[in-house]
Length: 615
Ligand code: G6P
Image (tube, rainbow, N blue to C red; front, side, top):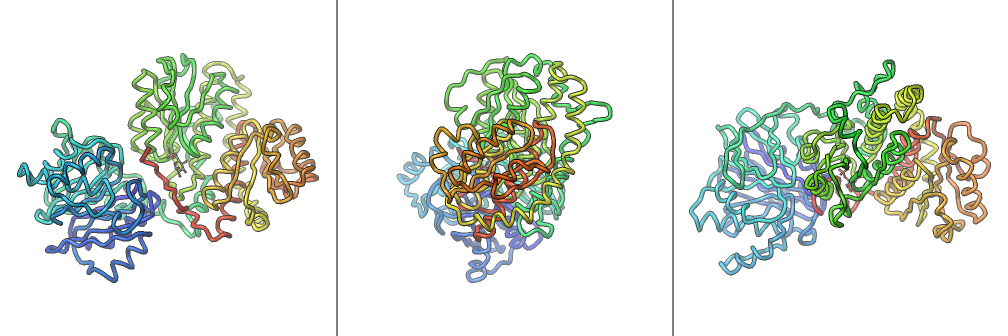
């Protein structure tokens, strides 16, 4: 995790790097730091806390002129978040400075060897070891910075996106990546380095995304030179034109990114199926699926790997793949899958779901599945991300940048893509009738408007949030397609309001959670008309007789649950398979409002990060 930003060019570097860090804070925000070179002196300021705390510190301690800077926002792995462990890190001579996103796994043995050679360390970080290793290689072997970084990285086990600067060579920055993302913005007489393109969008739309094991020599007045770290071969830089614009990464009048992203869902879902769903012709067109149709049709099993909210989207799709396309599905936490010697064969299709496309466990699960001969299909949001590139084929969700750490529009757009795939396969396999297929397409097309309608419950959900904001525990129940929605609702509440919440299949309540129910316990029950409605109503009765507080998420016009529940939140009617796209909306709003009312940092909840690039 962590965000890195660098600038070298003719502009004032400080504001570019500080603003860039603010845009990357979703990647980590427990400390921040900056190194500035004013043409003569290399200065570093760093602090525990957020980028605004860094700005305060810089105001007190540094002058900010200079055209070269490296900045970092941290999510601690090695060493607690404090000033000393914050990046950038100097080498012992203070000639070199480094920023790093990733983990150097063998840092202890490297540190021991460096200590024996007289190096000293101020921090507990693996990164300080790396910068001294580079310095050691440079002096021992009398190498230029780029070569020294390459030699040092060949001794390193782990993951990294780094940028290194040498004050004795002030026209260049060396950047490299393995496992953590790194983009280079290419302007006229200036370069930007960042974990994603957002820090430099207003300056250039030309970007090079480094591949794993590549090192870039970024020198003013020259083209970027890229080498393979292992075999030293040259790589032709591929400069791509970015499609992103600034508006997409700003709050656009909303108080928080999370709220903006919740409200973006109608258009995000529309963007997801635009050009893919042709209901008039009763066609779904997805090139990643069409090009590999034979593989999909011959698959004996689909294994879905993902983490967090993406895993919940995988669970929803398990229902639709099995229900409509009749393909057996297993949904696995990527972290468990990769470490338990799973049985995978060439007849399996692995679908990896990831908003960021950078989650380390998901990436490792993909590599494992590929090594066993499985065909791996990616469902990612971030274009050009590591997972998008590592998979054999895939489909983007096209949700636009998701900045709030708690995932919202990524979830609904992932479900949309996965539903399209399941429907396409069902049609190809003949497991769905043509009228049923057409009906699903027409209903899917109506979803954006129905999500808009579901969003109209916002002010009522706010009232409910006000009543339950002081709850210590919450239970979320759902059945069938809406069981994963219950899990997702509970996760949202935990993530941003720090209230303990559990999601359960409604019928399982009797096997444990029912013991928790008393008059203090809010129970959110998803009880839409289709999908075991009567059974869920019975579960609601069971809660009511134990005096639990019931918040029902129901289909418009429902009367039965209304009579039993303390509050009901209505969503429009749709097909059961598509209902998660609607029932999840009030749950997102509920956790959002509770977190705001409790004064929590909604977009940057404690201890979390948007993109988990460490195991
Ligand atoms: C982190 C984020 C979650 C996300 C999960 C998986 O935990 O905070 O919101 O669901 O990672 O991320 P991915 O990018 O792979 O979907």
